[in-house]
Length: 239
Image (cartoon, rainbow, N blue to C red; front, side):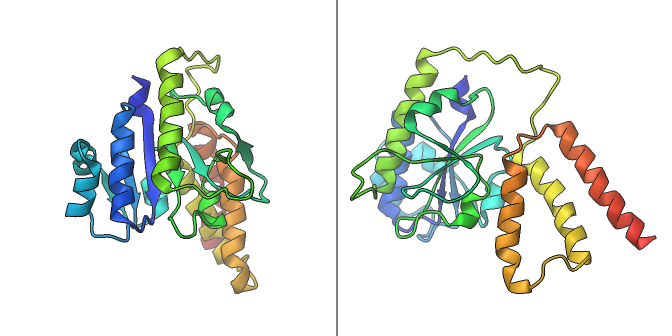
């Protein structure tokens, strides 16, 4: 049951072979959701299908998005993988901490491109960053190797553990899509007030703002309340 809640998101993957190998790893451990954000190779292609071996069904069901934000509409918890420690106010977790994640929710594992990994902007969408322990002098892992390590760990957790959480069933956590809608209203209001000044600092200001809202673990009700507040501020100005 919980296996269906897991998605693996590949951001700007550069090599066809890695996409195919990742699809194979996903199927190896009983998962079936592969999301691709702006892949550099034509998708699908013969090389991807060949390296996926018996996981062509994963490739055929995979969804492709042109922007990271769009791929997160059905994700509740996003874990970004990174070989580098980020000097950000975000929760950093280890492999052993994966057992603490609520897999009754929709969980996404985000992997960056082979050349540059994930930028701070992409990390700002995440609830957690995860670093796979490795040689401190050579931390870079192949994309498919990173995915298979996490897939195996999560598969083992889901196969051997029943998840019980005490949070009231009446409280429904906000999805990434809920937060994005609320954040869009907030940003529009701030733009109307010329908040983003100087303009060259706008990207980092948006990155920090997004990070604040994503790590708050807001409920659906809370995002509706905040959306009403932001909409009310815009309406008051227009009146």
